[in-house]
Image (spheres, rainbow, N blue to C red):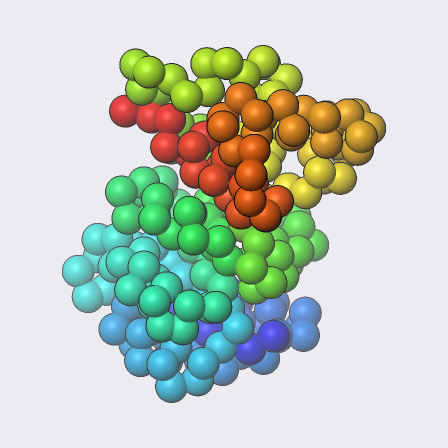
Length: 214
């Protein structure tokens, strides 16, 4: 997997590059600011970009803003954002686009899970830290589109928002895969997502879930 790393901390950047290289990634560029990230992606055309949200030149959400601009070119680039803090304004559009992950650095405890999340994102899937999801949906709109869902359906949808498949949801909730399929069908019906491709409807359901906030 051809990978670009954008991280302003030299120690973290070099450590991450070594970790990913040992796992079989081809590190085509490792840079320290958002402008260099954009240039590296356009030059090397990687499969995946692992990006720190807060980095030079302005040390705001420069990494997230650069990633959002890169979503249009190349559109199939997998983007994994890493951060010590949650940034919602610059990331909601990316979450809706697929091929996207957002993990908090301090909560990455398992290397194998982290590497699996990268593979999932590079393959067009998603990987969201539960704390990020909680922050994004923290303040529900007055007209809550999720009000019709049962508590279990909300649990299933929350795990879908983390990028889990039906099998992954079943394992997490100790349910059968058939039971999860039934819950997913109920979610789609209650959210009015009864037509279209399955993958597309799942994305729309997740967007509805993440968008149900103030």
